[in-house]
Length: 247
Image 1: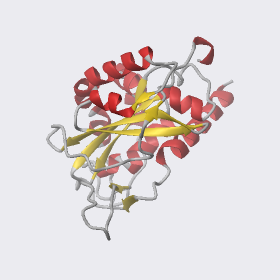
Image 2: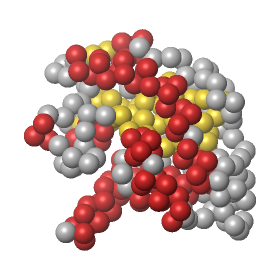
Image 3: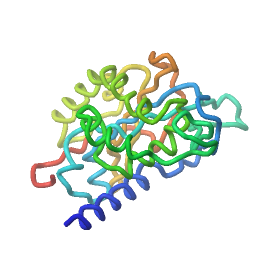
């Protein structure tokens, strides 16, 4: 049974990585950048029903009608002012000289951090329950934050209260429109100016997949969002919702 569960979690994080981390054609990832040098933090919230529908995943620990924290990503301010440099997804990754590492390269997540994420109720509510996901988020993004490992994940306690009222509005909208698509402009009308939406194609239809909130380094909303992470939401968008039989 343990091996079966462990195998499922490995499969889950592989699917999550493929679904959520595949490079965009317009993405520029600065590998092995210096830690702590960035302009904004992106708080990426995944609508789990769309993830589960897109990947044919059915598991009640993962597939629920909830937004879960995909990660907190240090980003550079994107620019597309120059026709020769249309950067729309621009970030550091796998950074060096991180406060959370004892040597110059990016480093693995520690057992102490994993214990914290497993045992802290706030962290369990915030993130999907996956050591593989936490490991990926720390090594790719956390090492770039200029924070140690616990500080990096604990940022959720700072950002989630700021976005919670908007997430509640979105969940209400999803409940009201679970059977029919709505115009993306209506989704944006419920959200602040520091948001970029990401959609996912399922059977040639657009589904809301992720909501990305942008904050500057002092924790204030960064309202001049010029960054698109993943596929843009255009026109009519479906708001996926799971039935009891699906989780």
